[in-house]
Image (cartoon, rainbow, N blue to C red; front, side):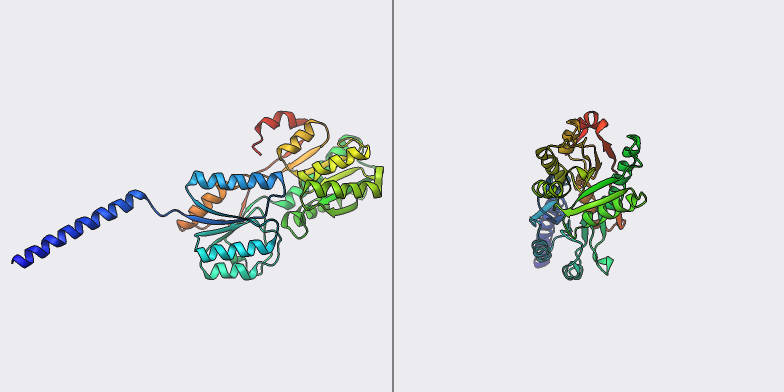
Length: 326
């Protein structure tokens, strides 16, 4: 009986200790969700704002963020994704540098049972189950909005029946926004035979190359250029400098429409040097963090999550500028 009593007493002590341990664990809360995120790079104002949004949202949502900057190189992103798989993160997210070349590494993530979220840009894969959702803008619609604004603007200026020569600064070759923005814009203006894209070349989404390519356009075409369509604001801002150095007035001698809606574009519109920017919001951080939480809780995400955006012509720039967050 004494031995049994001692055993029961010891059992009570062990049970009490276990209760205390479990209690301490429950007070510390559930294990933090870890997201591995591979960013394209820092090629523009938009991309910088996107990175800030993601990092801030991770802090706000209490999520552990493993962040990797690919410096605009696909091989760096693939390496980062493999590192995330090795770390056994809860969710992998990335903004793809290009649309192709992802099958193998995404299959590796799928075998590791780690869900993948595409942020901002899509990929071209045969098996779409390799990622759970694509979050961000509809780039084709953005291109269409730029084209529709241009046609309406020219009509409002009594130039609807003139021959309109357009030069185009494309984004990074092979990237989803470059492909889709071009497709959307082309789809609109092909309805109007007097609109002609006379030069089209990549500016790689950067100001420096946007300026350089615009200089080449001006050297080849000069005053024959009536419109510039830039796939992002940074290239448009670089091109504005080239136009001014050539001796023409941006926004007057050459009508300029671009995409993103960054503060720099609004400043250019207020100065009368840019005519319109089509919004593409980079503030996707909260959306991404909520999606990661939903996945962890077993929820099914929609295959496509679109961001609500607008079109901002120069006449509303001064009023809207104080509201811009990026």
